[in-house]
Length: 283
Image (tube, rainbow, N blue to C red; front, side, top):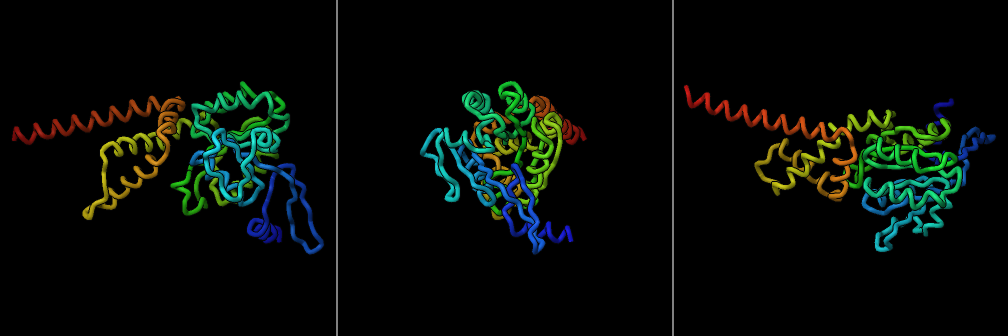
């Protein structure tokens, strides 16, 4: 019976996790009541996408320094002061701008406000938040490993990395539940483990995508399934801002080693091709 009630709640109710109060009505349905307000700082490609996604369950406001950025229809565009009055603030800014933005906000963040980052690297923002935010300001480090392109047909099943942070375990569990309610595949790991693995998953994908993009490849009637997959990699990586590519390569401490290994592999293959050609000529 508990599982049935849980399924009912997940499919029919907007579950809001902050300061949760659980009620059991006489008819047996469980529901959650909360007046939590979510704020999103940054309306770039991902910020717009993330704010729109969150608005399916929450009261979401979004702030952007430049007013020319569009805002999702179900999201309220707000001022900086209004953003700072939210219970939870998601920072959806470029990795290279993260420290500057946090420093500008930190003097005015109210104690108890939960700050959540969405950067594509994790050790860097974790260190920045730990050093800048006062001890009475909790934070979480997350990485939604998708965006407007990979999530355009829905986010169910897509990976959401959760690296914990500095806040009550109950709050962490609540947010994990929310992410799972969106259908996301939540993966818990340390920030260092994330960056180590991301260097050889996300980092190398963006690097290869940009390299292939320089070749100006196009679709072809004789293109194989593998070739079409390469075109998809270009689409999924080159539609993102170039700043994201630079930041991924610069702020993940394990990407330098990844690039070195990639270059070594390319050189080995090229040498093998050269040696193979010489062998045929000698026969």
